[in-house]
Every structure is written in C-alpha cells, then in structure tokens.
Length: 400
Image (cartoon, rainbow, N blue to C red; front, side, top):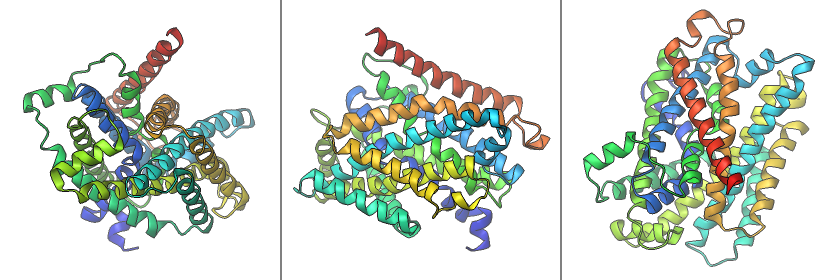
C-alpha cells in the first residue's frame, strides 16, 4: 500500500476514511431516509443532523484511542475488562454488537433482493439463497476487498443520482434550515427517528474505524474522517429530499419511478442495481465486522481467532445464517429494514458507553489523547439522547 494511503494524507486519506460512510449508506439508509421523507417530509431531518454529529464524535474518539495506544477499541476493552470476573461483561458487549450485525444482515439481504426484483421477475427466495451462498463463499476465502470496493463505487454513483434528484425537491431554504436543527416528533414517527440514528451511527463501524486509524496522527485523521462523514451525511439528506417527491404509497418501485422521472427511464434500473450492490456489499461487511469484533475482544493475537480460524468463521457464519433465515420467512422488506435500523439505534448506547469509558481511562491512554471537557459533554449528549429516544419508544410499545 502506498505510504500516502497508509498515513491518510490529503485525497488518499479521504478515500481511506470513505469506508465509513460507504458502510452506513446501504439498503437501510436508502430505505429509512427515503421513507422518512415520503411519510413526514422535512420533519425528521433534525434526527439526521444529530446522527451525523454523533457519528463524527464517536468515530473520532474510536480512532483517537488507537492512535494513542496502538490498540483497537476491541483490544482496549479487552484490557480494561480483562479479569475473569469481567468475562461476562465482554461477552455481553460482543453479543450486543453481533446482534446488531445480525439485524443489519437481514436488512442487507432483503435490500439486495428488492433491488434485483426491480429488474428481474425471478422468485425472491432463489435470489436470497444465491446471495447468501455468494456471501458465504467470499467470506470463507477472504477475497472480499476488491469486490466490496467495486460495489461501493456503484453505491457512490447511486448516491450521486440521489443528490441530483434531491436538490430539485420543492422546499424552501428557510424551511430546510429550520428542519435541520428544530426537533419535531410527528405521530407515528418514533421508529423512523431511531432508525435514522441507527442507520448512520453504526456500532460495528466504531470497531472498523478504530482499526483504520493505525499509522496516522490525530490531525491527519480528523482532516479526512470528518469530511468523509459529512459527505455521507449530504447523500443521506439527498435521499430524504428524494423521498419527499415520491407520489402515492412508499415502495422501492415508487422510489425508482421518482428517480426515473428526473433522470430518465433507465435510472430506475440503475437504482435497482445500486440497491443490490449496497445490499450485497453490506451483507459481506456485517458478518465480517462481527467476527472482527469477536477477534478484537477475545482474540489477543492468538491463532484460534485468526481470520481462517474456526471461531472467526463461526461468528460470521452465525450472523450470515441469522440474516438468511429471517429473510426466508417471507417478511416484507421495507418494515424489516426499518426495524433493523431501529434495533441498532437501541443497541448504540451500549457500545457508546464502553467507548466513553475507554477514552477517559488514564491507565490506557496518555493524557493528551483523553477526552476534553468539551468532547465529554458531546459524548454525554449523544448517549443521553439516544438512550432517551430508545426508552421513550420502548415505553410507547409497552404502554400501547
């Protein structure tokens, strides 16, 4: 790898950190953001603003602790809770991340199949089984980098298409600016609000981003990471604005038709293929990320947790199998995908709290890399808001 890319400088650094927005702009983002726009107009954009700021705060902290210590987030958690009495605590954290990955996996596969159904009439069960087998083969061989990179490029082009259509939404600048910062809670929007946060602040991305920061300094990391996340946020906003232009009941076909009205008939087919690309690339990433998390928390560099070990393969196989099994039950893709994003919104506070503890631990990090009072305040707001929204929605469900 060229030295420029390793150190994360300039354009190469931006390309390196673009992995983070590429990982969260999948079927979940397309579905949740466009559904939010179609159902509530601009009313929920504030949740997207919050989620982008939260992503910047948490991803920067996860990267900073690795720059400071040379160890990833998972390894530092393993050190901080390394005693036998803390074994169940580490198991709990890993279980939360793995459960989140499994929830994403169902949405990833269903999203990929939904994209294929826009351009093909084959039964969805056949596509689902085929995609599951393809993901398993790639994960087994480990030959995923080039394929996921190519698919991520297709997803980026789909994002550009959303930007072209989104900027044409009939909204006023004043109305958009107000919606970006003023919270509102329309009746029936709770699950979508949590979903908008869960689809952007992805818990397993914190472990992924922690590993990417090795070989950089804090200044280089911030100059590349924060703009990359900002670009992902603009694409997500464009998807919301495109959703506001959907006519009639929301569906993937209606969303494809909205793109086609502006960009031509072939744009609908391109959206279908882009949704497939986003789904299959994420369907490879989510199980792999769960296994990487297990490796970081439990592995400690030991051979029984290398990428071709039984433990590593068992983790990704379970996550892939859970998503495949859920997809084969015949559930409707759009509600399932939104529910998956909401599930990760509920799990996010767990990972964020562990990160918060590590980034304030003087035994693990040198003083200059610890959180400042300002960053601690930001992290506190993120944790409290996400936890509060989760508890509120849980109360709404239990209380009817």
